[in-house]
Length: 345
Image 1 (spheres, one colour):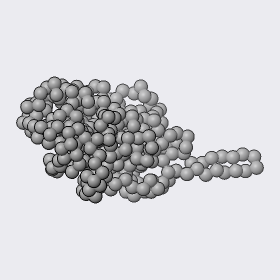
Image 2: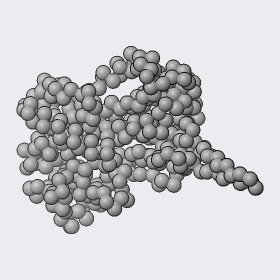
Image 3: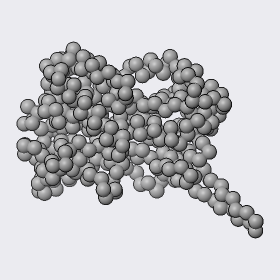
């Protein structure tokens, strides 16, 4: 499941590709036909991310501008869940990516990025005559079970496999967003809501960090890494975690997740720690039985390699980068939990 920084990147991508443009909205698969009909021909005026959910605001008529109040917009709510993805193609006049977070096949806890060749970018046909040359963008056909397609003048976005895809009015949109906890990536987030909710419960803090009604956008990677960086035992009851520790954890997540939005990758290690805990024998043994964490920056020679990006996530069986203790793994609420028994004691 994409973590919150990925959804914020998606919102920025939609804002970049389609802002202010009346777009065609269809449902090639047919399951979103009624919702698509409500939005078809409307301009996309807003793109908002709340944690792991994205809300796209469409104007009431083709001539609507960005000055239209939020209350007058129709809102497309999309929650990708475990299997959903957006893929993009364009005519070359605007910068696009094939996918943010990349379409994934999920096999247990393992996520594998599909070959980019299947993403079918649009092609450009050049027509020449004795007197003129014209360029026509050939929009790619939908691939797979496309729930919703958004087509603009220069780009197309296809949605497949979402957990939720629905059109809401403004009160419905606000109620959906209100169910979520504060999002560290939003300027209007109130960290005290997060702190108070954790501390009023005896539920383990590691479990609460994965509850989207407690804090929105934190997934399994940010959960493991934030707890490690704060030296907090994931099994510690929330009401026993000091307020100042939770405040520092929130501030740390803001920094880490903003880096994720900027780069498309999660990197939580400090530069001086990245070569620690890299025992070749332990690494070779662990690599044969652990999932590979994919990043949007895979293949970028200037990016931090994924085996140096994390302190504990997917590093079970390897030595802790700080103290050398073997990193532990366990199940918590049907998800894998990673932690250092010494540093987080």
